[in-house]
Length: 248
Image (cartoon, rainbow, N blue to C red):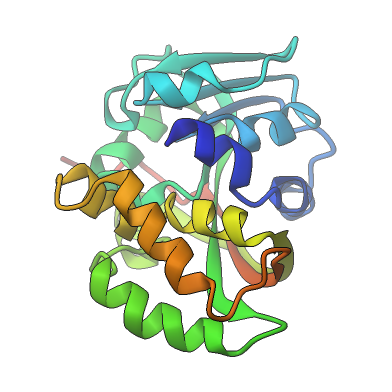
């Protein structure tokens, strides 16, 4: 799964990082923490505009595939249990990982490790279910695929009210669309990296091999071998500390 994730997840991170710099009014992001960095796609993009980047993730398999850079290091740990010294980071970034975190515990951590003027950037990329060459993709994904691999409920990019209760206010928000070209096999591989598919596989209700075979058989009806263009939408937020640390 980690190899598949590294190979087929959309490479939109440089555009998201440019937005973070603009929204924060910073040419350099300074010392950055990349939370839920996975195989390092976001980490490498951040390294281009940062003094240093630390990527953290709970998966050793993911981190083993993360790219190396002179100003990047990685650490295996949970976002809710980080033990960095006070004021270690100028910017904390969460890219397509906020829904895996316990928000209250995570945000409490940030009051310690962020500098007083530090900020939190959150962005998440969503597949819109749209294949530009064939509208059948949306119908299939919302019916056949979701019957076999039901979407996980309650997943949110960001709960702004909960963030405000923990002392973080939204300073800027935005979104942008982008397309990714996938062959049929690559699109199947991408679908196998999504949370709903992974949940069923990790619960042992379906093997990765059987899931891949079923998806490829289904896609053969409307996605040519050479594939096509698939539409994604990225949502972004920049949050700043809004005052005193909330009382426990």
